[in-house]
Image (cartoon, rainbow, N blue to C red; front, side, top):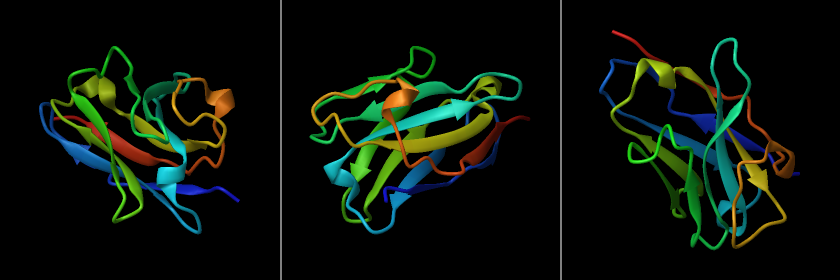
Length: 126
């Protein structure tokens, strides 16, 4: 069963940085395409970023492009989301999930992902 766990959330001031990690237990993350999503209070969940199994394809939401970077840490079996220049509108619960089908591309379609974690809270506030 593919199941991931998110960590690294917290409270940060505007302009600050956080690094989120998506970890797996019992399987190797670099065999799978991984997506990061977020859900802000009162809003629907939206795609943030994804990285293909091959690592050759990454995608970012327009709202985070240039500020967030997704990467793999194969030594730790994690997929990390480095978030810089954080804004109050980045406040949300951040989730990661696994796309077990696509290997060379990644999408932001939630229906293509499984093994969702419980999320990690990110609050950007002064």
